[in-house]
Image (tube, rainbow, N blue to C red; front, side, top):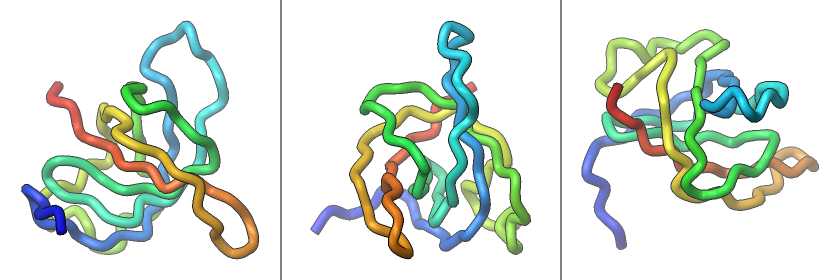
Length: 103
């Protein structure tokens, strides 16, 4: 079993993800941040992104007490590490692992 470098905290916060570059002016993609830590987050997104894609991730929902825990970011730059389809309530979303990038 893989050991995490940083502790994860549960969340259920709405997020919007956008491409970092202005060359891709697509609409932001909605999702739910399910957990986060100092090094990154796991979110269930409405679209799939390729590994290596750099995204701007913004929290748009109530953080439900998250800000007092280490690793919560209301806005971050993150690299997609993986993305896999996942059925959620009769629909498909993409479980996505995101690694925070230093700014």
